[in-house]
Length: 161
Image 1 (cartoon, rainbow, N blue to C red):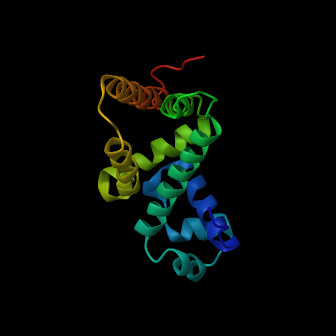
Image 2: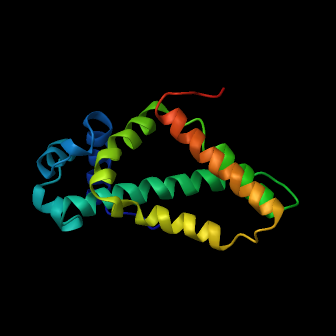
């Protein structure tokens, strides 16, 4: 991932804090300016609209998740199995701050489902590369179960040790 300009990074960090603490509905350029120290003009230079800022937050979170998957990859003779193990490991154990951020973004996503287009593309790619053997179907079921576990943990229904 290319290095982001400092002001852009400050804006994203501040916006993430606002969403985490008060939800996406409380995210305004004035709030972000106060939290980041970047002027409103500086914010709109990088993110002309609130939707652009929200989309950037989703994209950054998705990229972090992909990085976590890469870091969780194990040594295994079968690359598909190593990918699956990494995916399963990355689905659990998120800290409370990340869970609050994801929960805080839900209202924005409900209002504008297009914010998740990059995530949809990620999943479409995963499905498109599957070979659809019985083993691949089992791997897909495990990925879907891991996704469900992520949401169960995020909403505090269950937390695995």
